[in-house]
Image (cartoon, rainbow, N blue to C red; front, side, top):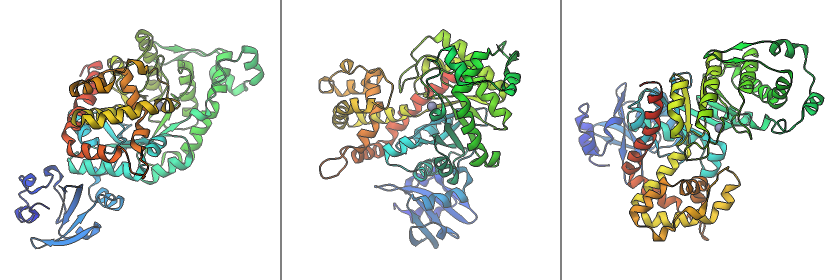
Length: 495
Ligand code: ZN
């Protein structure tokens, strides 16, 4: 602790906090207790001074006549912090006009993200992970939530952020996230969506389902006018196909809403994701799902359809932008009609679509990014420790085939230059190349978990050390890169 005594004696004049090793923006008061964060060589710590400081668990000491505690960033201390300073606890943000998820797989991205969201009125979701991401990064939801809370406290971000239990498929996972205070759940319905119906003939469809009188009267012979000049009608065959594909997914969402969300009593937002399917979501399918959920009393904040074209990981949109625009217009109208926001998944780096998204949603959207934040972290590593990056890159090449089993990517490894022939400066530019981006994108779990024969991490510890030592490099890169996402979205609705 760098002359903490001087700092504490100087309270409440805290404007020179930095010279004492204190994060200036972290200085907060609760009653007569001061709470702030300090930077030490190994990590950041919370320091509480004065009456009530014993609520934190850590090293107790006395300083400048005050009882103090130096507390590590544990989950228990995170809970105390969230209680004392509510701005460090997540809030439901999907219900706000616009929101952006910035999945932080490593638990180190928030400082850069905070710089972005200080400039825009969109609400961030700093804590956002899927179960698969938790497993691949060896993290827990406690840790994901803590990372966001501690950075928000340290860097003084007081405008509110969300926490997303992302792409959850099981009731127990939904319960786990909600029990920790996560403020949104993205229910991944893909296990309940049939992918074989498109290939069925009309006869097979007729044989598989007979419409009930209720279903007929709800959908057939009607024109659904949903705004933006969009009118939807169902043919009998189309309705049957929609029911075959989506009915089980709707039932699943209804069940989760009634049980885990206690019919809406739980203070969290509900997002339905139907994007992880083999074919794009047709407008009539989107309408059917929304209409059935509404009819059964399910209040959703957002829905993520699968759009036409390809939203591959970490690279720009691939496909027919004119068609995308047409379909986006209809999907946005359906969402507006039912009173929720469109959620755009796999939103990392889809620069050619952002203006359109801003435009057709009229600035009401949720955009979800994750992998691009990891890619920027690796770009920061390449910029600050080229030798380490080269080793990671070569390892990633050996794991690519294995990693590819879990992703749909069109990566061509032969287009990636040999890292040994590149200068250090050229190494950083690799991240402009789609094939290199996807290579590093999909191998993150392998890179973080790789161990030598003695069981030591090959890269993980060294990478984290760099990201800590060079925190500002990563934060600046994120500020520019995520900032570019937001600038284009805002341009779309004229801001
Ligand atoms: Zn998704």
